[in-house]
Amino acid sequence: MRAALICIDKPGHLETRKANRDAHLAYIAGTGIVEMAGPFLDSDGAMIGSLVILTVDSLDQARAWAAADPYAKAGLFQDVTIREWKKVIG
Image (cartoon, rainbow, N blue to C red; front, side):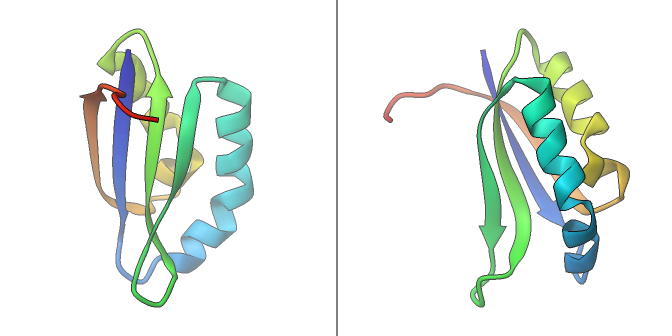
């Protein structure tokens, strides 16, 4: 199954994101369950959140992945929503 993680950064935490980006990207590469991912951008093009699509066996696995993400451990996110997602196009 696929799970969509919709993560919104805490306001004013761009430096937290930048400081943990390499660890976050290494985590994505190392876990092998991320199908696609990328940042949400504000009107000035600054990163303000993340969309991550995981291929997992359960939503519990997606929750565990999200909790272990270096961004989450650094306290970057104001809100994280995890939903089962069905790919239809693309």
